Length: 187
Image 1: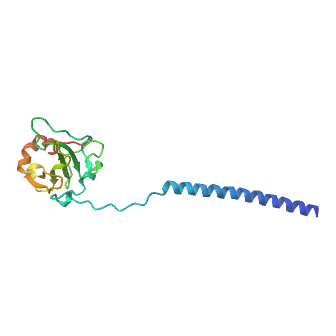
Image 2: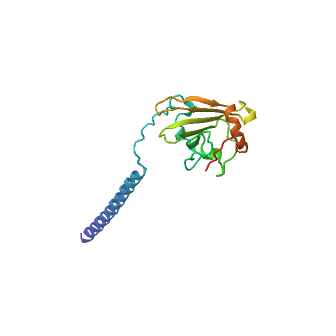
Image 3: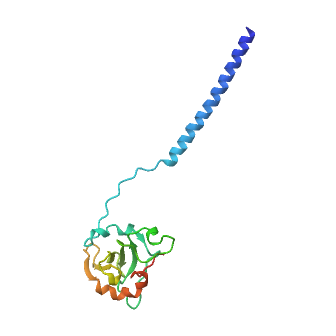
């Protein structure tokens, strides 16, 4: 009977040791699971509101400020004559890898590119000028298939209206034909 009791106590000790070990492993697994859940859980994503074009501008430029910005810092007005008078930012509807696949900008821009230059006029606190270049295959081979159009407005709540297009713009942009008619390169 002593042997039986001793074997029973030994078996019980092994079971208790195994149970304690298993419980510790279970606790560790639960803790790891909770840590992983903390890392992978994110705030619920709210649906983005649809981009709406500024009044008077075409819908294909809605949300342009979310596009790739070509300039790192705002471009100040140019003394002595600035056709887009004001502090400017320039955006393109392409991702960085599409126009600078190896970190260096490639020219020409791909078909379907839209480049937007916005300008805030001196002394104003709203965008008063939007210049748009659209690259459409076959539209104007003499100017690398770019269409140009420029809009202005005189008040923050006013609608943009067309002030210039195509030929008025080409003369100036021809100076940068080697970088596909776009003055601002990706920084």
